[in-house]
Length: 360
Image 1 (cartoon, rainbow, N blue to C red):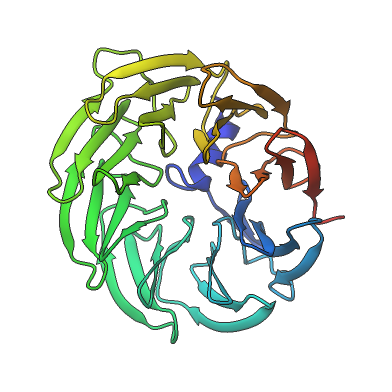
Image 2: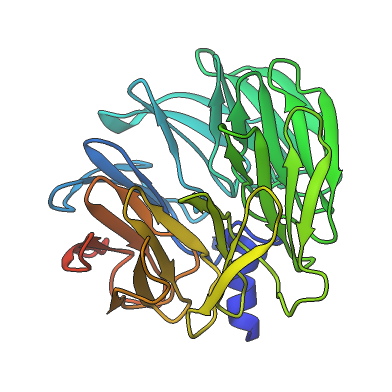
């Protein structure tokens, strides 16, 4: 993997960050963060958050009203009850009005680091991980800090909310489980490497699954924190950068080299393995009731149905892919870099639809 790609991954939601300060302001390099709602598609990239019409991809609104060289955004926003929540690389966290993004409700300035992760909601709080080694719980109504969890390294993955608890990936070789009302640590699960993506929680079994840069896939009991199994030792497994999926009682994931692996979620025993044919950072994306997508770094995106272990269809997406495609309804939304557009869309048969570039 060349140095440019590693810098992109580092800034994205993966492992650390690269920033250059200069007279013109922030200069940062990453891929667009995408969030999809019933009506809109939000694309966070460089100095703007774009609100697009979901059907046609036309720009509806943008934040901020005036572009600033000191502002950069790459984290996917979170949307709830008519408001949009997003953090930036200027250490600020914003609550915006969904109907008109330039109408800012409040701005939280308590962090001393960047926001690279999509925030999550728990009760009346928005949970915002920061690269300043802290996780902030912010009152959604007032924008005031409710609690802060002080960690040991930058937090760059979206928290997983389960009832009154939070599951948070950490780069310093563990996964945390916190009390969502107080921020107190309940327990932690140690790993062999940094965990860069949100874990997968399975409500049917109360199990949590995650991969790490320590070349492992781990399963633990959510109620107790006890590790149930670890897959990887004695295999040729490489680093894992993304969240696994559960499909037909199979835990499916990819490693960086493009191996697609299915495990028995109860035992960790390998069920089958195939290859995507190239580097995969974005991992596997579930297509509910149908199968899954694998998007390679080089823009090759393939669909695998539940009944097959080979691609049913493949398309070439312009640009390079480092984030999981977003699937909502019958639409696939793929954010890219090194292309004419920031996002490309497809239907579930792989037929291209609209794309969006700020110059359009």
